[in-house]
Length: 123
Image (tube, rainbow, N blue to C red; front, side, top):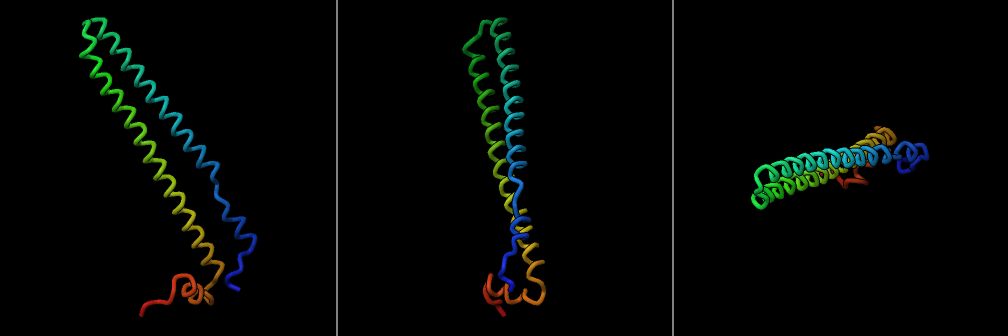
């Protein structure tokens, strides 16, 4: 019957979530190191500028703005990439499921399955 779900189909549908999680963790880790390096460079430049000019308050406002922008951009990009990766993974799973189910159902049962799943066709 067209609605039976063989064990082999379930085994083929197991996602590789471990690889996706590792890629996500690597993106966060390396991004963090890049941002941390940028902040350290900015603070060293700030220290040198304050030492040379003795203008702490004026320069501190600029440093806070730059560091806040870098940190905000880091978290914004990471959140956007995480959401994009999640949606792409779900799209890939849905496409793979549709292809596998279409191959399993076959052409002789396809119209009945489509009507059962999506409802009758509009004419």
